[in-house]
Length: 245
Image (cartoon, rainbow, N blue to C red):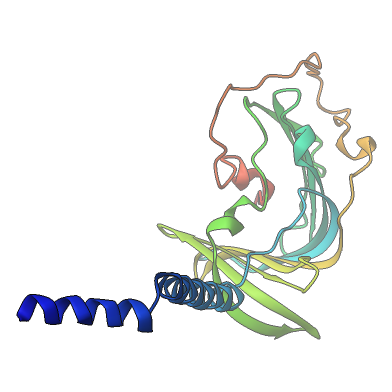
């Protein structure tokens, strides 16, 4: 009868494919799927390059070029010492023709002040600031990889980040050292730093001494905003490429 036939067929299935073998096949199939998925993810991870992990404690020297609309090109050189964990930065420009202006910017977030000194006129401009000093390279976490370039004998990888009309870009070598760093608003409005040296080390405290022309010396007390979100770009970034002409 039909019921009897179904009974024998079910026994044949059990004999030909015993439960432990069926379970084994299912396990093997699952393992294969997992292995294939892991391999695909591994290939994907290898294809998507990780952004450069540039240290926030460093000392660097650079050549600089500044272009502004309806103005002559300004060139020069400078140095940059930064200790972001301690809230201190020192950026100095020695600008050549036609500006001939030396600009000295010392950020002391640990003291709640920023000092901008015109070395030619010996004028000091002081600004108050609060919160933690923003990391100089935090923008890289949201930057896009634009491929490799050869720049002045250096093989480096270009990373670019855009928001509104502002573009930040840099070219980094295999050791995560920046070769070029650019801040651009348009093709006729940008600043470029061409690094000649970059040392990933904690700068000496003497790099961040308050200039003698700055008379106001605040008490060395720290201030931090609890749970404050760290911005990608410093709101004081403009002071770092200050041009007075």
